[in-house]
Image 1 (tube, rainbow, N blue to C red):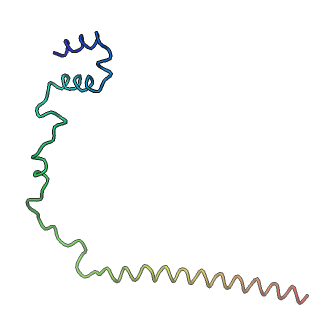
Image 2 (cartoon, helix red, strand yellow):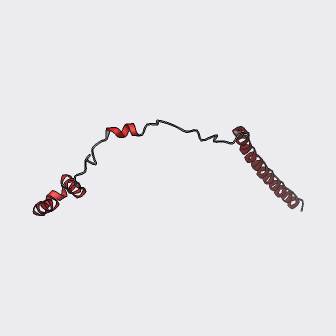
Length: 105
C-alpha cells in the first residue's frame, strides 16, 4: 500500500503538499495504527485519577517551626541594613570633620 501511495503521490505532487496527504503518508508508514493517533481516548481521563495514596511522613522534621526561621531572616536583613547605615553615618561624620578642619585653616 505504501508503494501504491508513493506512485500516486509521484503522479500528483500537490497531494503530498496538503495536510491530508501528509497525514495519509504518516498513517501508511505507521501501519494504520488502531486507535488512530489523533483519536481521543475516553479511558485516559479515568486512568489519571488518584485511586490510592501512601503516607510518606512529615515534610518538616518535628521540633522545628517555620515561624522562628521566618522571623529570623528579616531580623538578619535588618541588622545588616543597620550596620550599613551606621557605617554610612560614620563616613559622613568623617567627611564633616574634614570640612570643619579645612574651614579652620
